[in-house]
Image (cartoon, rainbow, N blue to C red; front, side, top):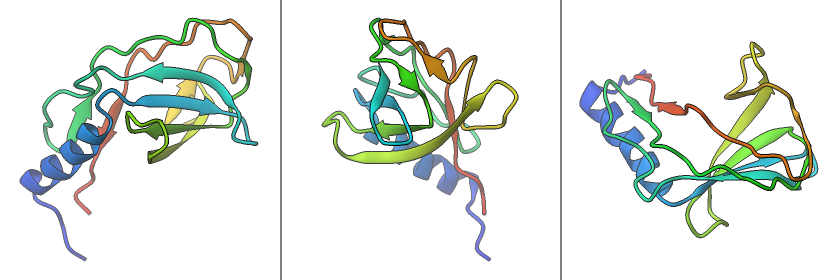
Length: 122
């Protein structure tokens, strides 16, 4: 099996991060309905280090649609091109996104306090 060098890992994860500039994280129900949408900055991620990028500060959804979160989709700024599909769990559940509660009320504010994307070597 091939193994990516650190340079390769950084290039790959940077390319993914660049696709998310001004994009969004949309939390969805199991039926693909929007629960909440948080927006990436114009430059979504900082420089890669050892295959990891860290998101810049994101814009909260201050008026969530509400519902039970089943997954998260990361979209380009066109809001239709999906870049990543992520799992969601409550804190400690091991999901790609760990939320304090999977149930979001209509009108709630939803924030992402930290987000990293990692490109493994293999």
